[in-house]
Image 1: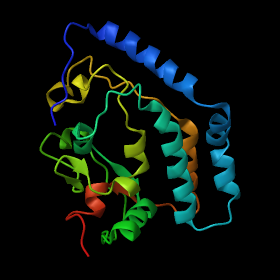
Image 2: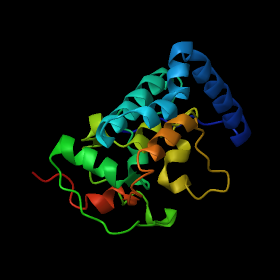
Image 3: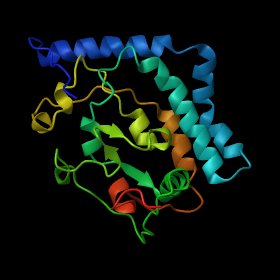
Image 4: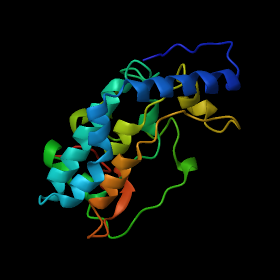
Length: 204
């Protein structure tokens, strides 16, 4: 899918517009949802449940808050640029994806570190099919949080990644990440790219 690029904006104008949209997004979140997000780490820490159940609550909370981001984000269905970058997940999330898709993840023995330079327009996520995420309902938390609040996807395009001014304005929802890290606090999870866990995609 081709997303139109808006010409005539300087990087500073883009930053100002993105900052305004971020403020509008946070202002659109209802107080009760805001409290739910803020209290998420504490609730996760107190939950007497399996990791998969806790992860589901983290993902559900992420979806609730980012639903309010839709009017402000430049992202659109079929865009897919962010599906070519590094997608780090923990082994417990790989197991969650496997359970919901019938995929078989690799049993990695240690963390796998990646440099940004390893990724490009030639490295699509293995689950990207026909320009769309084929595991959208159980996609990783990092994918749910990766929204572009710019006026268009200009900085998402691979040819612009290495420009000095390249920066994708997006919100940092720290309680989501804190809760996610709590899920593996007792087991020292293995962290790697989604492609490391699923090198051949879905297998049944």
